[in-house]
Length: 513
Image (cartoon, rainbow, N blue to C red; front, side):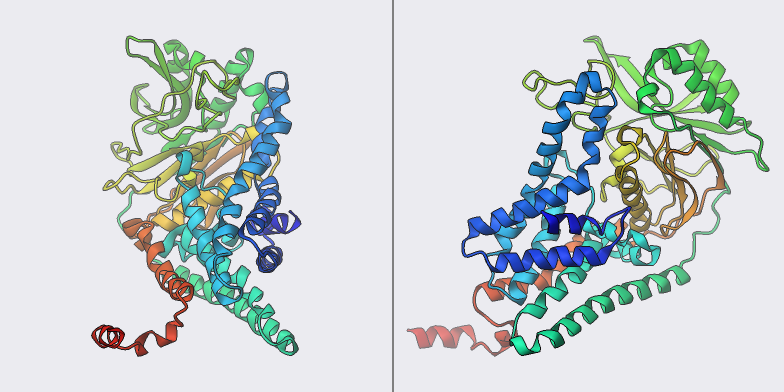
């Protein structure tokens, strides 16, 4: 469990990669002491308990917003989070134990860990949170290989760094010190080479020319989650957004952005209020993009959506995007009618998912891909196929999780999408971390957790399509292929270097006969 907690220390906001090296090396050596697969699985599970409890504890914080309704669920939920996510490291340990101790097991562990991270990114609707590649969020130069192979490719590099020192234990005892020096130096060299590549790429980048200059204003109201859904405060919350939208600045913004669910349903259905707030908040000749709770009635009853709405200065609703990747238990309850709980968001009706990712095109403005809340954490799901936008928009509300590591981890994951796609991002949070990030992952402007204010800045230009944006996770398979070949040969007892010296198949069959 302690080793698992050390592995978490590599992730934001702690960012101490050397502690993760200790965690993973210790786990591999513990697996070498297991004489049965079931023991190895148990070791991996306990590692996972420590890792998951420290990496995902903030999820349970959402249950403390309304203690009267959900507070009783906090202890069992925290235990379930730790025990459930621990199954993934247990699977890694059980598979890696198949190979003999030494280089084969170390390689098997790293490959399986990355493969299981990919599995976790889509299994049961997916939760690609805290992939080990996000450990490189500490320096923008280390993020640049994501343009080639995405966050999963970064995970390959991070796991290489974390596992190389484990090789120092294998061989003659009298040479342990020398092997430790070599393996640790190799790990440092991998980090240095990654940073050198990133520095070269950042120096060589050229943004696309001919993009229309667009001035943004992002609003972060910092409304406490315990107050956000109080009906008696709705209008004061709206007034706060309008006040920030009307602040004087050197340039008039073309786009004003409000965060997720900034306009509650009870306000949104009142057309007079909407007309008034739009008239007050939309800049002349510009648009207001705001998170809102919307609904429609298809004859069988009302359906509710977590939406992004766009109004122009004529008070017309010109675009709507409905969130398509909903949060289980937060926006809907899986197996409703079986589980004796309700969703965390107000109301007894589940949200309805929108159809798919979309690229929205507005007259006079660059096309953009809207992402609501944790839709920004899915590496291959932020852009509609064949509809490459000029920028990404992420509206979110991380007030559910308080002053925890969750909002920082959310930001790090969203930041990786900019490098992967070569697209800038504007990110407006109710509270969390609001930011404008350029197409290489560099912060242009930022408002930190639990700060109230605005960001006024120009939208950065996009870059040419990256390799990852064109090929997606197929690049990961290309990277892992030689490792998979090595593991297959090792499992069959064939040293990879002797493959070319094997007799030709016809001669071998003749000898057998």
